[in-house]
Image (cartoon, rainbow, N blue to C red):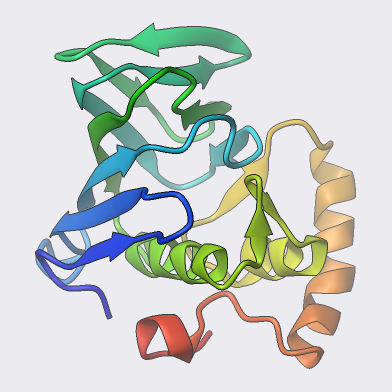
Length: 185
């Protein structure tokens, strides 16, 4: 379970996630993390949060965001709000690191999702921002912080998730791993 002040550091990339406020701290209203991205490039596919809003505030460096297919650079002091159901992405595409505050509301299990993605990356199970296919299906189905892939038709996505996520669970994939978070989903 994440705790206020806990810092996740990826030994491969040097990226860090520091929990400023967790779901437990805010009674589930939101989660706030300070993110330092040293790695460059797209780390996940464009996606849509179906039940959560996401807010970014850049402290230093430059954050590249994709907002409905438009590439935007956010500079220090700049902010960007993504309401639920808006396709987006964010990453470091510049020299040097970027530091920003990321707030997601409501929190749901987003802090556990971060721990899971961090753990998988540290264990070498996420390469160049790409999560294994069955792992992705399990995350899409069983995590409460629902997100969908922006570039895959929703009907096809739902069919794949509903057919393959249970198989992924049988094969040992989880949305949250006890190894990373102390609980399993």
